[in-house]
Amino acid sequence: MTEWTIRDIPSQAGRFAIVTGANSGIGYESALALAAVGADVVLAARSPAKGEAAVARIKALTPGAKVAFRRLDLADLGSVRSFAAAIADEHPALDLLVNNAGVMTPQVRQLTRDGFELQFGTNYLGHFALTAHLLPLLRRGDRPRVVHVSSLAARRGRIAFDDLQRTRRYRPFLVYGQSKLANLMFALELQRRSDAGGWGLMSNAAHPGASATALLANVPTRDARTPLSLRFARWFTPFISQSSADGALPTLFAATAPDACGGGYYGPDGFYELKGKVAPAKIVAAARDPTAAARLWDVSQELTRLQFG
Image (cartoon, rainbow, N blue to C red; front, side, top):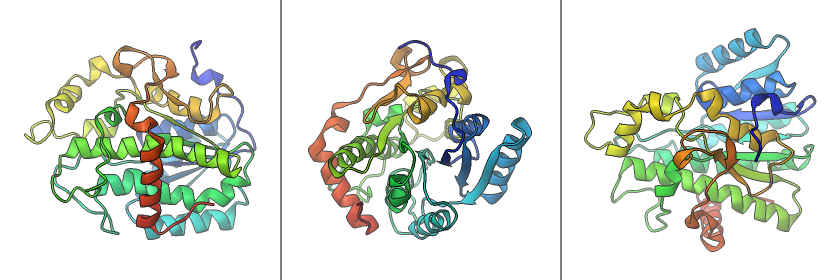
């Protein structure tokens, strides 16, 4: 693949996009870049203060940008439902959904408002529910795409169907990996379901490699429960990582590039995909298992009490 940069993003004029977790990091850089090429962008995040500040920064950097903040708490299915209903009242169609927001490795097991383990419930189930609610708008969109932001942590993830909420043994980084593996599996399964059902979606995924975002910066390095690999990554971030802007490029490629494909997965091309130019990323065997993906889909519909279609 030839080098793809922010200058290669095609015009998004006339397209309506939603980016979750857009107040900082990869989400903010994605929203900024999309607004700069003409998209009408909703920044969806939990904190109004941080969200409105992000909107102000984008408008200052890109005069005339069409950006707005809408509150969304992915750890609360009621908030997800209300957000989607408000979007449907304001917009007849949705062209791009970037499922980016997430929480990373809280050291003590926490729950969402609906009683799910926080990482699985926020990073995966919240986005699963959001996509289900917005599917009618996406199906009316112009060449609609859904991008799911995964992570290198997905390589160490395992879908514990016998204990999805990790009530028996909570290991923060491995549970984070489960949520990010679930995101990748969701991306591939959504493409299969779209193809079978004629929904007309392009569903793909991306990961930022090792990027200097707030998630990594907030990892507790002195906590014995934090894996050595994560503590290493935290301390050596300046040497092994790239900026949030560069980390957002795989997401932006998946969201806008004519060469992106449904069911694709994109990340950096360097050592261990930590940083580098945008390229197809490694899809681990667990993510390529259609039987497991279908099972996860069915369980997720039961947990969220939602159906796609």
